[in-house]
Image (cartoon, rainbow, N blue to C red; front, side):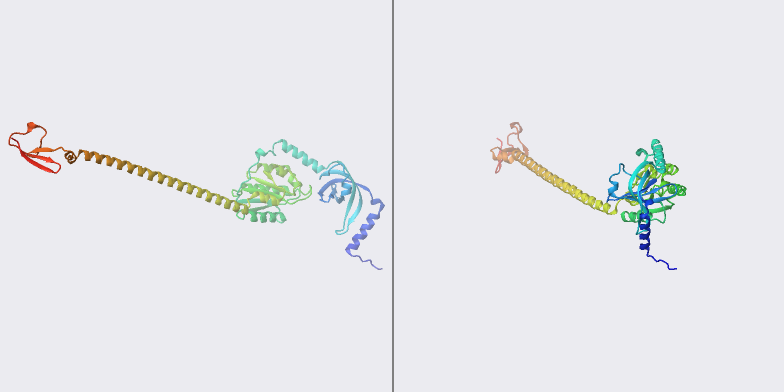
Length: 372
């Protein structure tokens, strides 16, 4: 018997043609919950429909999506009208959705909203109870899978931005119910260490099922009870879990959590350069001010000294004039004379008697005489 041989591409095309030509697989209705929803920039929607046991990939192109009466969200329970097709490059069969009708929220999403409302009513989401993130942490504890890309991204980002920080990994599974006790234990271990300044709880993106362990109530209450501040970075930017709401801060991605955790070394260096320049300018200004002040004091002192010297000179000149006025020689030059007897100055005629030898001092010399 001859065997038919196909390439993989030929096989996928054959299956595609068989499925797409079957009339009973055209415009069928499939009920399920939306998961893994992606809104492409082209306007197409890519998502999965799932129930408790299975899931199937779906695509709804822009032309059909434009007529939707609602905005699809993960967790929506819907009925999709679709044709069966095969995506040849990967050999995946999928639903080409032409119509989408919303029936209600999925069970997981409903449970998420119920727990969210409960914890919010207790005040566990209030900003007033959340702890501040340290500006310069010395050691950061990370709770995530030890083998995924998340821990590498976090370590690379921290090393690039702030090489001085240390990182301690508390490994844990990050998917499935068995991950919950591991996550709680890892958080408590890091919280008990005195050298840990900040905790990061992180994992990559996924469906609501993949992230469901982060919607556990016991995990949420463990996060609230931590003494150390914690940043949660669960999934992608559009993913929200209960852990995000109770954490002290939420980051849209694990890489963003690392960026929030530490300052940027390059920015710090620029700030230091700017501060150094401002300080140098300020010091120069202070030095110039003191120099100017010193010059003013010097000028004032010099002026004061000059004034004191002039005053002292004037006083000396005045004293000199007074001394000159009191000098007996000046008096003698004005026609006065001084008469002495036996060396004693005469002030009265009663002081002399006959035959006393007198000496009369004039301006240019003495005159000797005898009293008769």
